Amino acid sequence: MKIVFAGVEDRAVKVTLSTPAERLLDSEGVITGVIAQRGGKKMKLKVRRAVILACGGFEQNEWLLKQYLQGVPFYSMASLTHTGDGILMAQKVGAALWHMWHVHGSYGFKFDEFPIAFRTTFAGSRNPNRIMPWIVVDKFGARYMNEYQPAPQDTGHRAMEIFDPDLPGYPRIPSYIIFDEAGRKRGPIAQPAAIGSHMYDWSRDNLREIDRGWFVKGASISELASKIRETKGNETRMNPQTLETTVYRWNRIVKQGKDALRRPQGTMMPIEVPPFYAAPVWPIISNTQGGPQHDARQQIVDAFGEPIPRLYAAGELGSFWSHLYLLSGNLGECITSGRLAGRNAAAEPPLKDSVA
Image (cartoon, rainbow, N blue to C red; front, top):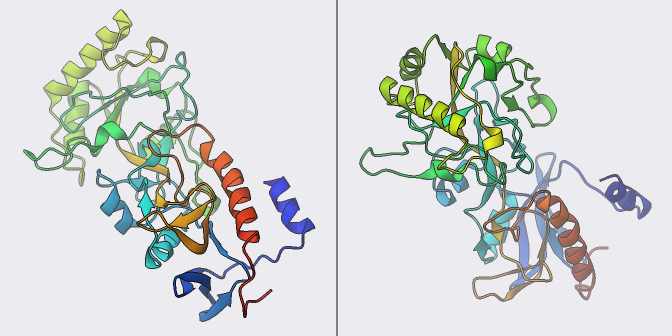
């Protein structure tokens, strides 16, 4: 980022802050500028060659999340400003959309005191020998997922999205993270990754969070299940006997060292030292990948695959990641897509009656 900022400063590029774009200007299908707002006043900004949308994703747009993601609800750990503005502007001028279902995320916590979600401490690539002190169970108390998948930040939420018409509803939203006293002492369960005023310093032993009431505690697994049932607002159907059986089977799996759900042996830890702890976990979004479709030149295309004249995209706004996200992939894509979009936009012939 230092290199990028230095490039902007060396070239004396004018950067205007607090001037959000709201709509694209077009003339007979050709993009000619944007309508923006500054100080409560709207203004039209015409361009010399092209518009590049680099507005990020829709992690904090509740309406778009409900339309394109299967699970409900998802919570985001992204900046509150990521509201999908670029997607809506591109749709207005006829852009096709792609990858709208794909979010880069996992499972984690959402507390009323904070507007953003907290992810668990397990991020990055999977370490098959790093002990994970918990398991995850559904509303009934049954384990159903590999808690430590190969890409913990990308695919951890997917098993939670099943809808059951017999309930009806989502039996795995929320799910519950279960661990014991030995697991509590291993280190922080969550790692807040927000920015600015939303930062939170998670305690190393998780005691501060237990004292805040974010976790329930039970002297036995049965008591823990009963306390989970008493938790308001989560529509849980936690069955004490089911949870007891789940934990019993988990401890046998740890001893045998082989898990049918393919969790690596080196990550396993028994849950047997009282007291026991639990908290609801939800599908968590790090960032969205969907948005306006673009071609190899980063030019946004319409529903027929035809480029929209003088309109380009960069970054995770319509990211090319579709099914699996590679670690640091969005960072690399920002640089490569930005260079492509910038060079191709700069190569456009000047518009008549344009501004410098």
